[in-house]
Image (cartoon, rainbow, N blue to C red; front, side):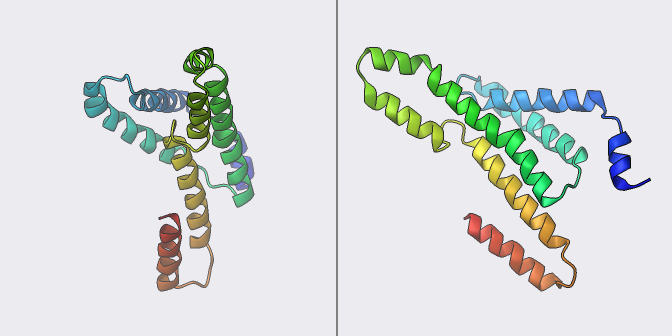
Length: 160
């Protein structure tokens, strides 16, 4: 049985998928400004760690093109759609327009698309892009450890 056939025939573990979804939702709640500080300091670190652990456990290695396609469909497009909804349906935008405060609406629009409103999603997108690059570089045969380290350090400094 080939790897592709194996991946197509494997069943997903539903309780793990549900747990990961619940953890992701709890992480989003933790990034809300109105979330109580007790939740953020006590529960959020545990939920975040559990989310990353489950995500790592469920990770499957894909080709670069498939990884980028999944990133586009799974994060980038929903992020852009959520930004559009946030701008289009934001009640604070309606109140600002009614009161003639157009600068507020323009600043809100700029902040949303620069990633200041939901900063963690662009960070997650860049982390995934870097992971795709580093994981594929590590699979190149013929590079010694020093060249690997230089490539990884170079990519990290590129991010900074």
